[in-house]
Image (cartoon, rainbow, N blue to C red):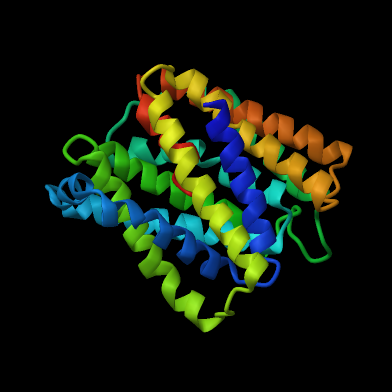
Length: 290
């Protein structure tokens, strides 16, 4: 699970390098297209993906998951990789809230303790990077990162319902397929043919994302939801450190405090959620936008 979180953090860093010239939707589309490669080589995966009972839920998962990836990569393109990843990794908050209203999960009053802590941390982080004209530190690209987390939360809510009847391959396949479809128009609009070194960063994004998801899936057999939820937040820390050391992204005291509060709040929400035994949902919440 540590390796999975590290790979997700490194993937965000690689995506930041790739979007220095290429658009976020183009990088996201290539990443999702690469995610479909297992279906070209594994006949069992293709058969499992074609066995579908709830097409509507897979549509929701695929579309919202695709939007989450696109918005996440756009946020990475226009903000620091650390801030974009931090905002995206608040998705467990949104998935928990949406699950209450759409799939009838019980509301726990305990979530009211960590939730405002996480929200306060988000405000501090974006305020530390505020520009003239931003509202409470939120510019359009920070709001894009928040929207990516909301879409990720919606995708996870669909997964929680879909996994009652659908296979892992059908859920994963819908995610990658709609990821290509949703990102394709914007990718073609701003298409720039990758150069030699950019192909390497695109390959790194794709390989790191697939490897991280595989490792996370494997770890679910051995780890409880709380452990998975806490360790997944390492991706935020790693992406921030990579951005600071290799891209000179500044982390001041206010941003550091906000990051600690946000991660702590998200971990608290994850703990409350884990008490309901949602091991797989919590893990997917951390990986669905990657």
